[in-house]
Amino acid sequence: MTYFSLAIGMRRFIVTPAESFCVLEVPMLRMARWLCSFVLLLTVALSPETDLRAWACTRAVYLGPDGEVITSRSMDWQVDIGTDLYILPHGMERNGEVGAESLKWRSKYGSVVATGYDVSTTDGMNEKGMVTNLLWLVESEYPKPVAGKPGMAISLWAQWVLDNFSTVAEAVDALEQEPFTLVTANVPGERRLATVHLSMSDATGDSAIVEYIDGKQTIHHDRKYQVMTNSPAFEQQLALDTYWKGIGGTVMLPGTNRAADRFARASFYINAIPQGESADITVASVFSVIRNVSVPYGLTTPDQPNISSTRWRTVADQKRMIYFFESAVTPNTFWVNFKDIDFSAETGKVKKLDLGKNQSHVYAGNAVKDFVVSKPFKFLGLP
Image (cartoon, rainbow, N blue to C red; front, side, top):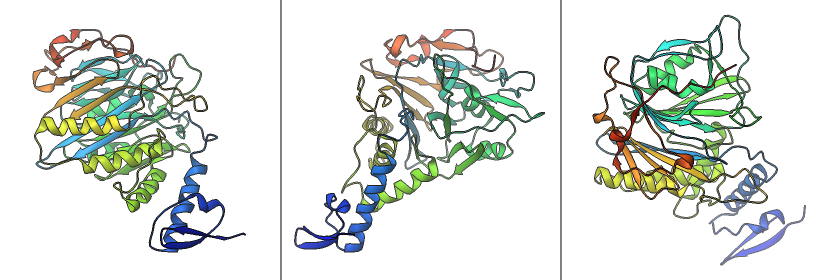
């Protein structure tokens, strides 16, 4: 292999031609070459040939003083995802929507959820401060059905957690028993299967990421798992995060819309924003982080057609029990205060907030009063 000399300031390094494009001012040759090699690895891993169907969403959890926990997420999708908000009281009877062997349960907790196409729960918080988020993961591969084992449609995955658990630890304990087979289906209006992974966070700040890789369930459970994006699988995302933490966010952060870059930026900023501020300022700071990793509305990239615009963002304040919603096409943010909701099985009612096409309906302040009594939406399952 050919080597040649590269001067960086007052230092001179011996590098390969492939490494020479990296101009990094570091104190030692070994570190310089390691960093350059890692950049090359990322370039290959995230090249245009990589499957870009991993629609771009991001989730980040803020952990502050005095028990402050705030979970944010962006929803990035190529077309209008048909999102509305629903209030769902506890005591609702559900089934897994996959036929005779569907899992059945009765909801223990009420929740406020954001739907996808009004056939699935993509995001939400229950009355105990448990938050779930579904994000795209193209590497997902779900297990095959097992005779005699209950099944559940993937459209209900996040809702099952909201209905049944008040903490991440409870949910993880249940999921480790694998009480159901998760069954996927085509994305509405498309000919491809829904491939998603699930994040959970609770009012204590605990987190877990659940994925199905090669047909097997994998759970990453730890308070430190504050960020989730899309591809690659979470274990590989953690390795990339370790790399960027070694550099330091004040030195350099990656700036593209790709999942690994958004992961690095969200990881740095969610822990860099000020702590100890008023609740409103903290929520504003968290919103600024999730906006930082959003994709500009209407953005098109000719050689990357599947990089998608951010459609909406949510911020769930799990201490004050307020669920904030922000559409990319409306001029303001509104919220849903759980203190003003009747979640009881006896008198609580299913209610809907119609967000309109592209979530363009405008609401202001506490929008609980704008919800109207509605039929429950029907979760997408097998025919």
